[in-house]
Amino acid sequence: MTRWTRHALFLLAVPLAGMAVAHAEAAKTPAQAAEMLERADQVKHADFDGFNHLLQDVAPMRAQLDGASAAKLAFLEGWRATWVGDFEKARGLLESVADTSPDAVLRVRALATLINLLGVSHRYEDAFRRLNQMQELLPSIRDGRARFAALGEASQLLSSAGQFDAAEAYAKQMVDDPPAGETECKGMQHLLRARSEAGRLASIDPEYQRAIESCDKAGDTVFADTMRADIGSFYLRHGQPRTAIELLEPHRDDLRDTSYATLLAEFDATLASAYLAMDDVASARRYALSAVAGSVRDEFTDPKRTGFKVLYEVEQRQGNAQSALNYHEQYMAADKAYLDDISARSLAFQIVDQQVVARKAEVDALNKKNEILRLSNALDKKEVETGRLYIFVLGLCLVGIVALVLRLRRSQLRFMRMARRDGLTGICNREHFVEQSERVLAYGARSDRGACLILFDLDHFKNVNDTWGHSVGDEVLKRAVDVCRRALHACDVFGRLGGEEFAVLLPDCSPAQARARAEQLRLSISATSATPSRPELLVTASFGVASTLQCGFELHRLLVVADGALYRAKRSGRNCVFMGDSGDIPDSPYPVAASG
Figure 1: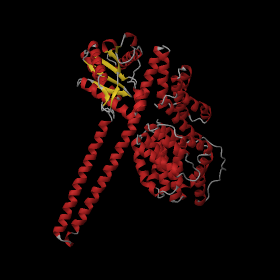
Figure 2: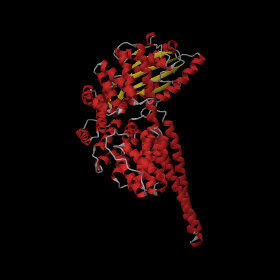
Figure 3: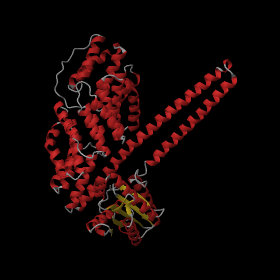
Figure 4: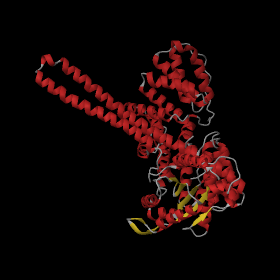
């Protein structure tokens, strides 16, 4: 479950404020029922029990309600089903309102809740289709609170799919024009989250602190703490772990009292990483265990991934090899599942976007066909030659539109292929590298042909980003990949595991050959200027090599052994090649995915 879906679900389950609502007697007339539905709508966040009683009183009169009241009842029942986690029932009720209600405001409210529900249940393509439907309705909506809620859902969903410009645009509308009873608080939280996930935060502007104060003053403490979580992560990424701790720790106990476990897990994951950076392994372990325990069960979330990573590094520092290996396995499984979910959201957006464009083109084509038919029927009233010429022109337009539709179909297939490649360098992404490597290793095991795995990453790459900026960092990564490609064979499997870390699987290769190949790659990288724009910037890389002669043909063993050799290379001064040894070979039978 992603950050945006956890946060959106919380909006439907705000802790009860204890606001009392009298339990009304059963409605006696449709007018009374309409009044009770309005009261239920007003108190649903503050007094769920009173809200539930009101719906129970109105439900027996369902057959007597007019169309507007019946739709309002269906919406509130769908909202209630979403609250209690009955997603199938909620989906049916909300879809009925979204598709059939004559009230545009109610349709938008139902769509916003439905988008929330579909995101939580990982039905991303359906969520983006409903988002497109809601976007078409929004220009006609004048109800401020309905627009405000819809803009928040749109911003969160688009940010989760990497559409950060659109997400920021919706968040800014919330900041610029909050309805009565709302402040800039929620809009600023969505804006900060979109900028944070896009990597566009260069510094913490005072406007965010003012927004946090606005949230606290309005009683929206969850939004305030969500902003603190994003700012704490920013400080940690920029080498200020102590500042992150000073920001988050004073608010952690108050957050725990709200029972908002998913946000508390974000706090704990950031605190665990910050304390590890401060070499306080005891505190790092404590917060990491809390982050793992507080994450949603059976879901691979970012806090759970971070918690396992910190626990792995803590055990490794303390020399507990078996525990470190166990946590490393869980970290890699969580990391792979988390990245798979990110890819699924991005791909779902691309597919739905292409479908919308294709559908519009098909509608245009149908309109052109209808126009051709109309002109054909009018030929007996107009000059024949002129009519034929007009039909010919329209026919050409129709052919062009059909060609466009076919091109869009091909684009959809291209997006599917792109999902298997790293967007920056063009080589295999982590998932595709694992898939290809396991296929090569399986063949090697059957044919008794050895193979070797090379892991390497660029030395001091964080300094490149911090000194020269991310654009130069991206050039360095692409330049290093180009250099390596020229030195690799067509049968070698080359992939980016994450950040500045890369892996190469060499089929039918001995350890001596692999070491020589790794040395060749190392010399090629260090002998080439990092970028044409910065010829003075030189980049080196450290290498770790593992062989199936030591590890067998299981990818997870090769990764762990090569990873251990890589760390020895770094501890020995970097810009060198180390071979894996028997001390790096894991004993655990548990499966291990590729590391990040």
